[in-house]
Image (tube, rainbow, N blue to C red):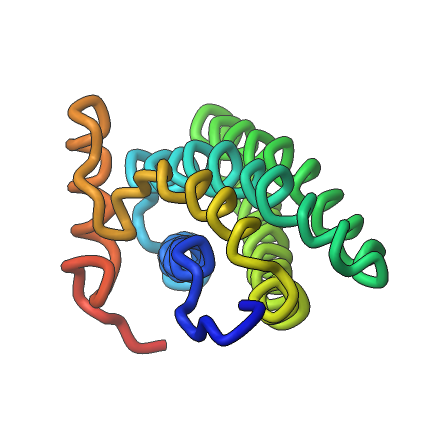
Length: 202
């Protein structure tokens, strides 16, 4: 932050926690699909739907729009030189929601039409996960440190307020009643520290 305030803005902690949660979901998705493809594990379509639903409901619809409107917009004013990086990240945000819908559709096709579609679904999952991990790395390397360095306390107050309304259950908040069963399933699948499932070795 500007000045002598060395406290990490709440919004940055929330963003990093949400990135950690998404990374765990992506890892679980990759491992689940890899086991199906390479170890001939029986597909658990409920688990796959739950993982894709989480990505759609939280990172794509909640996390990314707030990065655009609350953080990136203010950073553009302070650091015009970051515009190309921010443009690229926002373009990826715009593409991400459609990409996860495409994955959900491919999963449905695989479930309805047969196992011959698994390799294409697995390749699409791997591509989405790889792009998402690269995206988060770029944000944490190029954007978040610049924001912490350049933005002032008044700007952070507004950004913090926007992100503090997020209630991602994988970052410590209780799920809404509608989603309790879904997140219980996800938590049982994920390894610690975010979940209760067993850690599997490669």
